[in-house]
Amino acid sequence: MSILEIIFSSDFFFTSIRLMTPILFAALACMTFSKGGIDPIGTEGIMLLCALAGPVGGYFTGNAVGGVLTAMVVGVLMAFVFGYFTLILDTNPVLAGIALNTFSGGLTIFLTYYLTGNKGSTQSLNSPVVPNIDIPLIENIPVVGAIVSGHSILTYVSLILVVLLTLFFWKTPYGVRIRAVGENEKSAASVGVNIMKYKYISLLIAGCLAGLGGAYMSMSYVSMFSRDMIAGRGWIGMAAESMGFGIPWRITGSVFIFGMADSLAIRLQMLNLPTQLISCIPYVVTIIAISIYSWQRSKVKKKKAE
Image (tube, rainbow, N blue to C red; front, side, top):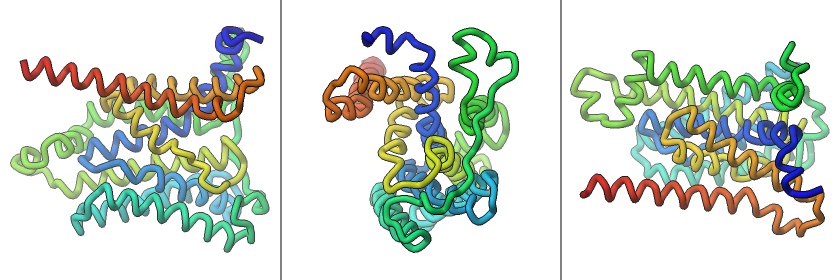
């Protein structure tokens, strides 16, 4: 099988959509943080804690909905913790983000061991998973049905959220005020906007989005939590958000590129290429994408300066 046959197949695109879902949640969370003028650097750590909270919540509530809601609650709590340190205590957001990401890595290992006696995964909990669904009518369309239908419910939720967040940030008073706060706090305050109120609304929404991303990883992508399973998707989400210039549909396009890179890495294993080389592909694509983005931004700045 050639590389072209691998790429131009319905299975490749189906896998790309599946793999882009957690990155899309991360990118939307980063976008919401940024819209409120909050550094999104803690997204990776928040998603990791939520990835553990999902299966644990599902195990104790006995259903997948309970697990997803638990992950979202944990996401909001951790977002507020990050907000407390950066907004109230005026901690450097980069240092706070590094601390949160490091803390999440250690805490998830400790909690996993405390709950299961295993430091690596929650496999023994036998927690419920979020089901996949087939879309009526579309599933019977050749090629399109094989690509679009049969994904996790959370995948479709992520795509719906792209539309809803677009409407929220550009068509509602609350969304416009959040953007105003993120773009220029002093100007927003001068017209009577409560700065902290809208920053906390931003934290609330971003925490929920990060929670959904974490829950997807441990309740849809796989059926359990495993150590460090987010594996940089929070960071890639930050890159995708920047490449998309904070616009949801552009962010989705950027995320799809990363999803295809992950899918290609998986498919290339069929060609017996070195696994070390294959595993580097998504990260190489990230570096190239960020480089292109930085080059474009520098060109824009030069034109403005002229």
